[in-house]
Image (tube, rainbow, N blue to C red; front, side, top):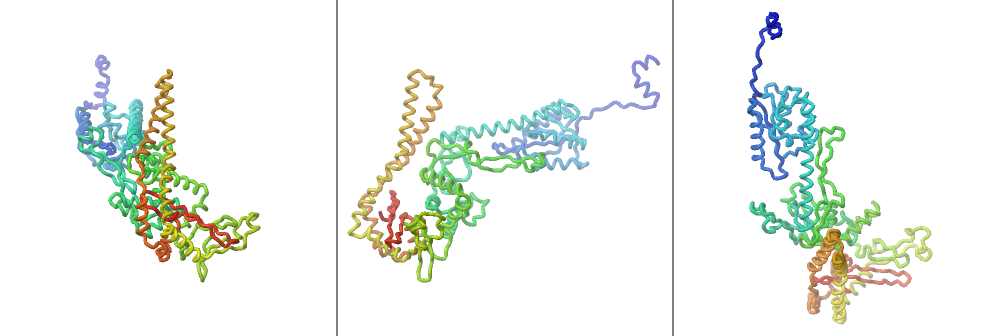
Length: 583
């Protein structure tokens, strides 16, 4: 008995206690639930993704006696979204509480697709609490919560998943930036108001071209483009965002969401808003150059007090250094670079003035009971300030009260208490002056002045571009001389590329402008003849149209109360399509 005790003490003890030992029998894993995830951001096919992940899971658990009986598969869910906010994953977590769920283990096809960052450390304890095993292919078996190596490896997998996602985002963004800078390629999305997306031919990527993908380009939507030009013209004339929006609504012009409801289903199409005008005025793509990255996706905590709740995506303005621009024009121009720059400088000056300046701007087009024909166009010679409208029972006046002058102003010494100027005689005099410009006895001089204005406008606009072109060519010649003198070409390659890009941009701007068509003398005479009696037309014109004409002529009226005279100057804009106003 001593020998038997030494060889198998447990058998002897079982015999003494009367315990019948049962040999353990390994019946395998049994029924398991499968979980997988597929993101559609990179054009993955959900059916194919489910197939290979489920196939990997089955190959992994079947040798251990496991069989997949239940499937949970999330489609279109980012790996950064916590399990509680994924549709199928949250359903799986809810099934843990059901004792009749029919499975006691979970298998995944690929761990990095299912967990992100620290998500595994937040989910694994819930599996263990309900007695559910977790089988992960990267571990080569079942996850053991008591094994420190398993915990460390799953933490590494979560970090790898996060790193992989960030690397993919960085590569895609870098590729898209390069396509915009070098090719001016339209990167998709809704076209800006004023443009439409058109077919640009086969896709430059041979594989995508073989699959039938087409390149997309921006082209001008003439109706909307005219509205954009109207908006910029009004803004440069001093109108505010809300004032422009109110005017467009008054004229019955459809807002962007009403103009293209198919691509603006998320909008109410209930008219123009100040924010809509602001987004148009601030959009640099109207200059004809491609811009990319002005808005960026940022992941923010859903609840700062609960980090485990995960992140949500919000779109915010990108930092200026993140925005890229094409080196050459990418689509037709609606607003010139000069006018767009003027609008941005004007907007910055308004922002610097604060809310008070913004409110003054909005009042420039506020609906009023009386129509002020010369609003903002008349200045008092005594103090240099703009005269304000002052309606009276017997007519409309413009006044300049001395009480509004700053205390201690030198103008107070000679400024009367109030200076008045009646509108009706001024209106008749201005209309008569405009009519005289096109009178048969003065029309030759007027036509001559209009024709002289056209080349002057051209030379001024092209001068800056030509100077940029000359500077770029001079830089390239200096770099070439330096290389010939023995400088390492690699040291100046970036500078040469930048100079060549600047030269290409300037050449493209000059090529796109081309030679202005101009108006011949006969065309100007024909246009004037088609207007008929201009003086009579001005007399019968509606007040609103007359006020708009005065603004288009950029009238500058200086009232001298001592001489009881008005000094009038007009600065009409001349273009190659039509001639507006006098000279």
